[in-house]
Amino acid sequence: MQKFIKKLIFLTIILCCSCQVSYCVETAQWHNDLRTKFLNNEAIIMEINIRSFNSNDKNGDGFIQEELGEERGTFLNAIERLDELKNLGINTLHILPVTPTGKLKALGTAGSLYSISSFETINPDLYDKTSELTIEEQAKLFIQEAHKRNIHVILDVPTCASYDLYLQRPDLFVNATNGEPVVPSDWTDVRLLSVGTEDKIDTNVYSLYKDFVKMALRLGADGIRADVAHSKTALFWKELIKYSRDKDPEFLWLAESSESWHDAISPQAPFTSYDKLLDAGFDGYYGSYFNLKNWSSSKDLYRQLAFTFGETKKFKDKKSTIGAFTTHDEVSPILLKGQALSEMIIWLNSTLPLNSYYVDGFQTGDDYYYPKGNRLAQRSNTDDDIYFTHNGQIDIFNLSRKPGGKNNEIKNNFILGNNIKNSILPVLNEGIFTPLKTNNQKVFAYMFANQKKRVITIGNLDFENNQKVTVKIPKFNTKKQKLLPIKISSMPEVKNGKAIINMNPGETVVFIINE
Image 1 (tube, rainbow, N blue to C red):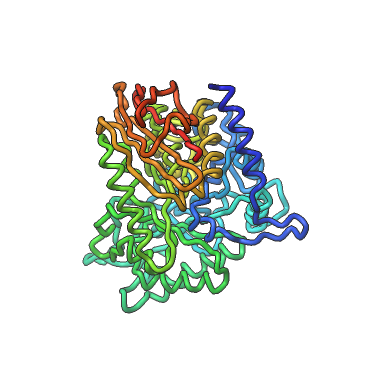
Image 2: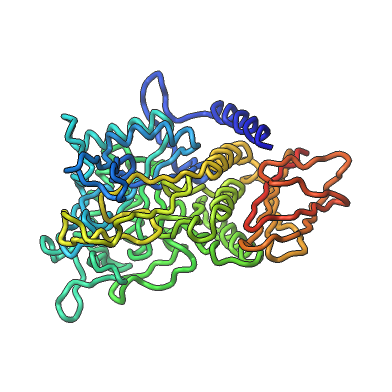
């Protein structure tokens, strides 16, 4: 089986290398086509934090002390990892906020990436002092190097702003009845911006976001991910998206939004549902795939898929989603349900018509453990002297270690899954989706089929017990057709158009049938 998998990886890599690319080598000119690729479910996205992406934590405490000769992540040293990402099958980067962070009423020793203090400049923490290039030139170079490897780049724009910015520009913020700025949700390090109403935009705040779009375009970015997008009005986003599209029609807009979210982040904040955000011009949203960890029945998955497929098809303009099974807001799958959950996430991403999405470190099973997390720091760049972290989640509050684990089985599945997705994408996009009949509700089974190929995915949602399942495969002739195993621990018994499989806890299997 291992020899088979290695051969399959080799063949699919060759197949993928023959695909058309967006970077013209002869002219060294990048042509952004991210929106088209995203709407065709071609994006395989890795979420990264430049501040830690290629940092060097020598003493292993999880955080960077430059006085000890340790090195923070910068745009320039991040270039060193681009070939690694390309070899993993990544073709799009979602870069967590690169804007300056607040230092007052802060969380963590570097401040949360989402506590923005300027919308038109770059975080000085990302500056490489060994270079004579300006920080903006360094950021441009990183994006250019990503483009040379046919990797698109999405920048993240925060939804709220820091207390530091409030002190400078109180006119930009919403005040409570006591005259103090509003703390949204339980995010104590940020304050609520005033965005206006559905009839009238707050032009001052809109100008900030317009400045961010200008910077993103100037740097050469291919799109924007809008943090907590539902906290602004549809009119606000519609105008901003139109502005960017007038400059670059292929500029992607991804909304952090879900159909399972119904509440505003504050009584003083608007709430714009995901469908209204899509109607305003967003190309895609998150869906509710992050609920996978709570699903115990195949019906939960089928219900989610049916809803999402229906929602993305009801708009005049094409829409899509990302496989947000795990994000920087989610605890590492390794801690939740072990390696099996990570592999299930890989194969759901790879066999569904959506854009694959992962967090840096996922590909090798990082548990995002920081030994000195939530302990006193010897020095801090903010007014917080604690290495504040969310246990089990990638750190966004400090200068911290490079994400990464040591699980090569997950890595092999990651590479294989990404390459397989490229080869079966026409089946996923154009084929018919069919939930398959089973005799076990703890096991999901679905198929995508066109006239040339059928892709079958089966998964055991019981992560503690083995499950035996019988899956009925429509119009399957055992004499003329064979199940080609892509991912499986042992071959099933096949008879009378049915596959009988003994599944390990949390196991996911994938087959292909060539017509």
